[in-house]
Image (cartoon, rainbow, N blue to C red; front, side, top):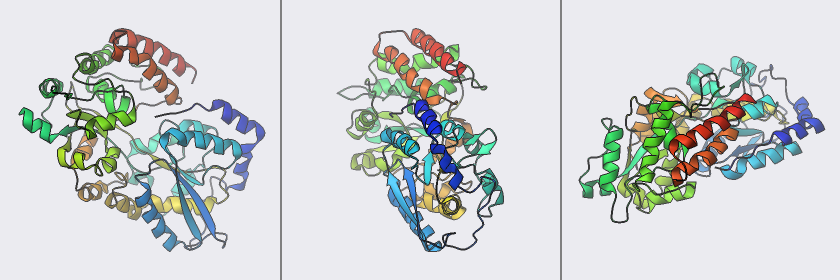
Amino acid sequence: MGRKIFALILTFAITVGVLGGCGTSAPASTASTSSSGSSTTGENVTLNFAIWDVQQEPGLRKIADKFEEKNPGIKIKINVTAWADFWTMLEAAATGGSMPDVLWMHSNQIYRYASHNMLLDLTERIKNTEKFKLSDYPDDLSQIYNVDGKQYAIPKDFDTVGLWYNKTMFDKAGVKYPDETWTWDTLYKAAKKLTGNGVYGILAPLRNQEGYYPFIYQNGGTVISKDKKKSGYSDPATVEAMKYYVRFVKEKLSPKIYGDTERAETLENGLCAMGFFGSWNIATFAKNDYMVKNFDVAVLPKGKTRATIYNGLGNAISASTKHPEEAWKFLEYLSSKEAMVEQGKLLIAIPAYKGTANDWIQANKAFHVKPFIDMLDYAVPYPASHQTTKWEDKAYETLKPSFTGEQTVQQACEITAKQMDQILASE
């Protein structure tokens, strides 16, 4: 996924006074004062809501429609910009003082926007609302969007990564379907048996969350230290996990795949019998007849321990919005149990509100998706720091030679660790 660094742009924005737009917002310590279901100004207000997943737009539109019914005078305009362009769009909006009123936020980006005062501090508003409590959400998710003790976004959803498998290919090869008894050894043996006749047994791409990250943690390794000051790529347990993962490519049990589109196509075109994909792919897979007919999903195999990667989006408000109270009303509704239940029933994403995930499970008819919820018991929060995208993007560059065979895994991991440490030292 394309991501761009925008420290210079933010510096410029601060210099020219774009952030002065915050002065039009209500103070962060002020809770919403309007109890009526309408605009606080009495005038019609249109809020721009920025998201990056076109698959979620229809469901979110239905939720926004319900909000509009309850709040005459407030209209929601949903703007969808693909992930690769979303952050570029937001950078341009920041320099022009026209950030969307309400927007999705990601763990990779929260520190930049929050630390540069681009997002509204929601701390006091959350304390004073009767629509929900922050404790209604998993603490790990809430903490992602808490910067220096201030809450800048409210969890929207969560995701985990599972093992997708082609039932038809498994049946033909006489291999039992993956389940909770599978280990690294089971996975490797199955990949070997399923490889042949133009089909790869598994898809093990140069990919972190939907690739080698879970294996690192399953082996007792780490991507980043708990204090966020040191890389974990030089950890022997991490190197060992990477060697296991790269082995699939090295032994030609997996194709050499680097792009997002190509990853999905290998499964959808019947080129791979297994692959690692997150719960957010379900909406797309459910629209593919081949996937629905042939595929299902299981929990990830066990290494020395069990692990999957756990992440989630947050809903935030721009600090420069001209309609802070109306934007907060909308965010309150998005964060309510009512809206979260709808998010699950409409298959938008796994709702973050505690106790509502079952609505999402029951609504999914194409696949047996319960494994994504079952893995929460041992899920590891997505490894991140203040400048995640810097060292993540660099890691793709430095680890790639181990996938192409130009370097050993040990060499690639050592180089990655050194460059990551340099970036972390500057945070």
